[in-house]
Length: 108
Image (cartoon, rainbow, N blue to C red; front, side):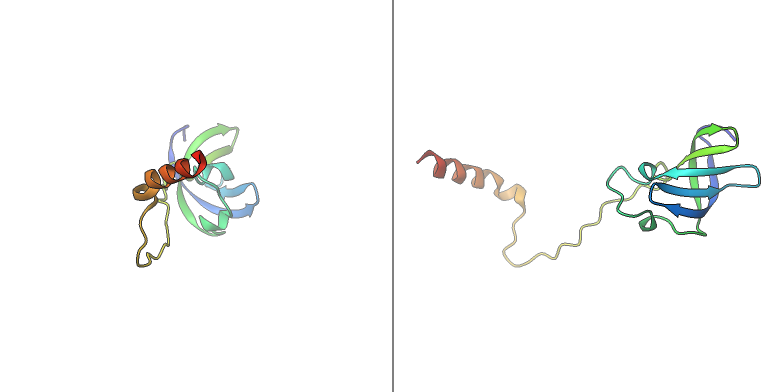
């Protein structure tokens, strides 16, 4: 096993700062909370649960302990649950008009 390797590991515990992983009889690892997503992580359980076996990337090896990354292999697209109402126009289409109106109102 080397830095940069892709491995399978089983989630054995979840703490507020990360998830512990058993790789095999020789190696254990930690996925730090910052290695789940580039965005805000509200809860690690949004990504993994105890008992899950997942692919991970090895970031660092210190003795038999691994620093692992989930986000390097599992890119999540942001999901937006927006129901469009009649008359809804995206911000992009109205922004310039709103700025002009704001400037006109404040110049008086």
